[in-house]
Image 1 (cartoon, helix red, strand yellow):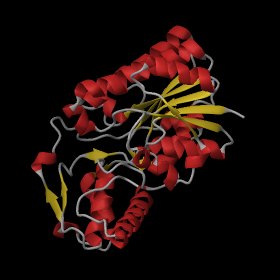
Image 2 (cartoon, rainbow, N blue to C red):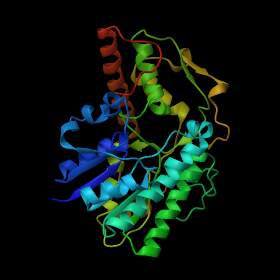
Image 3 (tube, rainbow, N blue to C red):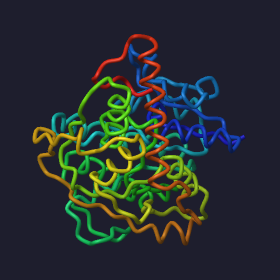
Length: 338
């Protein structure tokens, strides 16, 4: 039985990846940062009904010794480094923490793999935010990077460290440059989930408006289930390489909102409010990925459309909010993703 170690297993991607690997017959270990709120951190694993099927291990990306211990205890065949401080807005408020966790944390994980089990295959979760101020209309593996946030800059450090460990130590280390990917398990701080949760609360009479920032920003949105499959495919190849994972379709926040409002039977203009306080200090106006290399070399392609994904998210949030109403715990504000 192959073994996989996932950092960030309690996040959206980690949970979906864990389920995918379990379905492939893997034994899955998940790195869990020690927290006094464990009941809320593993809620995605419970949502997917895999909480009791993964082995959770205490460790922290900022503590190299803990990562060395985890590698020694588990000796995984594959390591997926998905953990990060991954919210762009928060990276402006906590730039040094973002650098330590998202940037140095990845280097710590690479070093732990090199020291303990250098033949393990390593996946680094890179991001389209590294492209930032775009240098080409469609971004591919050769497009110059120009990050526009502390998060993008930290991810770029982690990306280049992965390349350097691959080339310097002959490690099987890959980076997946993933464009935006969402699901019902997305955190409420991300715009897609903010929209679908807000619409659910409006639909059920809990709130009367949805406040957003720049709705003219354009993104390439896919479904997390499709994207974790690409992560796995990268580690099944003869040679390691880096891949852009995207749909190749760009959609504005405005149009994404329209899809969600229409599906819920609501008129967007009656509820949407633009709030200048929600604009980023430096905006990334458009991101559009070119997944040609992944399609050709990995045989990967998306299976879930943007419309189907948004509808799934609205349906899930309607269920969540109705559950809160039934329990008498509902508020107009966001709750922990669940």
